[in-house]
Length: 227
Image (cartoon, rainbow, N blue to C red; front, side, top):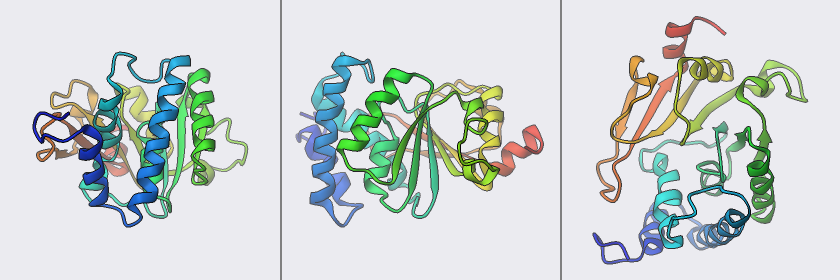
């Protein structure tokens, strides 16, 4: 039970979801399935903290993953990478809601990607795929060939601490009008603070202090030069 609202975490998430989607019942059913699959997979592979209360997943992971929706980020028709996806977060929640976007979930840990692939299949997410790659290998190992095939409109990242090396590698995979979107705590300690960035403060959701950080391609280009 959420002490601030008197409602269960699932109810809080449901009310949030209802505000941003039309086919609410269908999507809530998918999130209910994902909740079950994630807990099952987490018993085999450590995808999220095993100390988390199952009820808390609705806010700590699902609600949190969908924060871009509250700030009017629109992924319709866009190609999106979830870098360091872990248990499919935020990529799977974003793919469930944004059915007209294309989502590649990338992680270097094969055991995690194996579980993520199974969850994507069970959820019948035709707009979503999983890739076991290190970030510097994504373009090199792309089976389609050509830069356009591995250029993304948006790269989201929820759990990886950013360094200049990582920022440079991510920039190589962005389209020239693309951007990076980071999920960060209120206190930001990594190197994105040195960039000219846009910060979206999460002022409405009091259960957790959170920031979304948007870094556009041109900002990265000024820092690192061209691709």
